[in-house]
Image 1 (cartoon, rainbow over the protein chains, first blue to last red):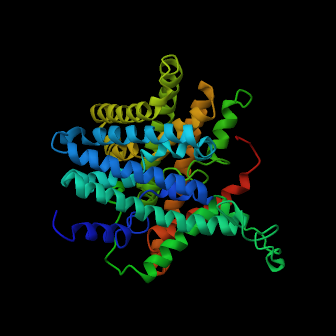
Image 2 (spheres, rainbow over the protein chains, first blue to last red; image 1 turned 90 degrees about the horizontal axis):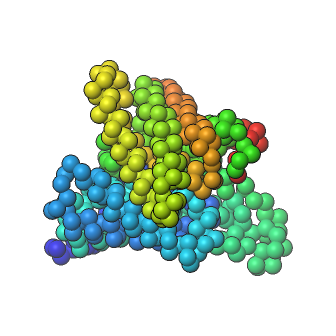
Image 3 (tube, rainbow over the protein chains, first blue to last red; image 1 turned 30 degrees about the vertical axis):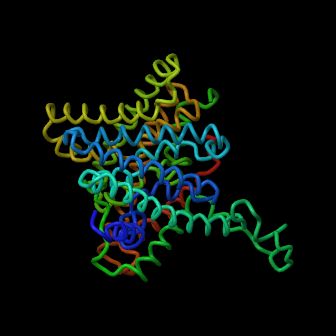
Length: 220
Length: 197
């Protein structure tokens, strides 16, 4: 691997080619699990695990996968890692597993994973592919955490279950008692608005026109 | 959930628990394909058909095959394989039988395998312990709800494209998400008519 390659992969996947706000991939889970910070952290860890390992394995197998059935092989590899995550969550974090419900299984159809497998792992050696998976996962995670932080804080006045605003806030500050929860933020419309706002801010301030790429996986 | 009729499940899946607007499933193709009413209608039709059929097949596979064999943990792999195989089969049949139908639906079928709404319906069906008829209603209703949402969105976006100026950062995905949020607000008006949870 040429020198500086790892740095370039990380910079691209965290910044200008971020899977969520630049490529618009993996939106389902971005919207669905971000109402509470705790669930989001668990979901992100699961996704980073699956994405890194599936990218590595698919890249290691890339010379033996016939191109006609490659989608099927990719899905099977991804699904086996997702099953591991699901079983681990059920054993160690049964409450969160119940709250996440079908969204753990839906990591299989999360287009970030298929997208990275098709776009990167099929053409690169295992080690850069692992880094690509890890950095894409981290790029996805920090966007989700930012959205979850805003949604839980505005929607329930808390972060990670700790009450920061409203009644019984941990600062015991009287001026925070008057906080009213924006209950719309924990419901479906709030998720759409929050992600749109995030994309607007990032694209408006950061990404110059012509630089962004579309969702290659979805357009097929 | 034996007490709810299959028809009520169908109604709920279309309106109160719309798969796209309350469970956020199938967003990827929703954001990309909803530019024109014609293509949206094609994809919507394909989703209704595949969703109904796969929810029925997956119900049979799960309760008659996986549970007796105690292989429930394999359901993710089995469901996605059933969906992919079914889509492939339908594509082949349509190609042989009708050229016009293939031209209308064919290009959308590969998109459907990776549409998370299809897998999502099967997973929800297992978690909520629906009976066979309820699952059928849930699959059909989920498909109709998804098609309804994407058709409405395509209509709005077609008008938007010709008449309004959108801030640069909001073009494409941004404005579509805001419209989807507004549609979700409107659909919240149906809340309380049927309770699924």
